[in-house]
Length: 145
Image 1: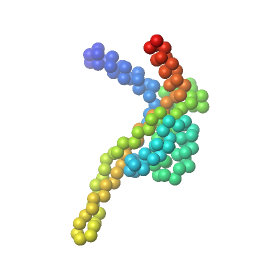
Image 2: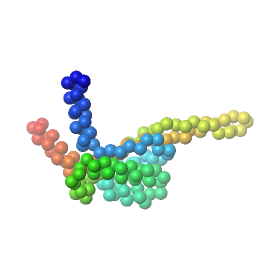
Image 3: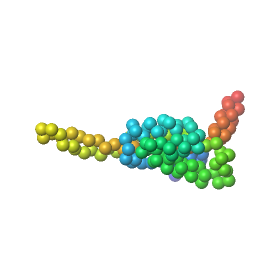
């Protein structure tokens, strides 16, 4: 491996140390239904988001709640000595992309068949610390001056 590639790989590795995320692949719910719950919690504090998801009747709320807990656990692994209560975690981004589509045939009148698309989705949830975000913004503005 060349020096340039190694430096780029090290820079990517350092950037990933400050990103706390979780992914759910091939969730068997349509993306349109899942985006409704994703829009509700985007940008909210983690405690508020967990309460909303816990008491929601939507099927995708359970999956997103489990994913949020996983992202928080990933944050805990990377920040050993810090308490969650002191961190002010929030849902930085939640992205719902369409996954694979299972195509089935349903019988229709006069010997025809209608296509049924069973949709799935991929959810990517990123959690961030408000305190660290504010510190990084302050440092960037100082460096520019």
